[in-house]
Length: 177
Image (cartoon, rainbow, N blue to C red; front, side, top):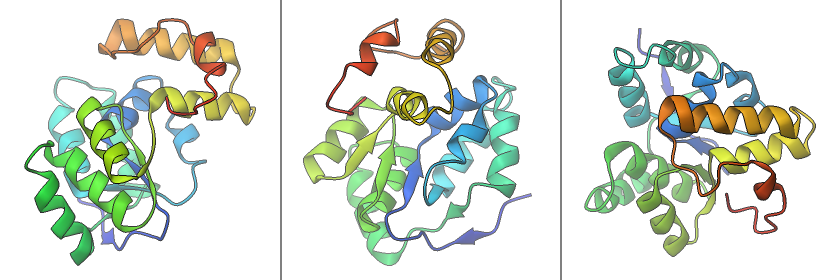
């Protein structure tokens, strides 16, 4: 069943498909639920639904999208932004970035083009690795656990990371992982 859609909150934390997929693959979607004003968008929900046949762990993501992570409908302003962004980004990235920008929020994506566009547009940004850093710093998980998740994402899910060892990201003062 499709979850009911709502308007996004101000300063939304907007999840893109890759981060949702990575944490579903590690069976740690509970960590994402600790993020403030967490939402995702209809285009991401569609990508998760479409990926379920080839990636069975996405069933876990589908379950939280129906209960714990609101799937928001872009505002009129976000829909206008999305139309512009669709010229260069895939639907999930375009819609998530548009909602993050329109709500003065945080975009959670690992997509290189979406990250570059968000940076150009002045939209706050993090990714799966940045979330791991946050969860370690907030004592939700250990650095060893984060390292295990990162290696599993790389080995089992084809995640492209700038480094294989999580420890290098703990020294990243930019917080821009």
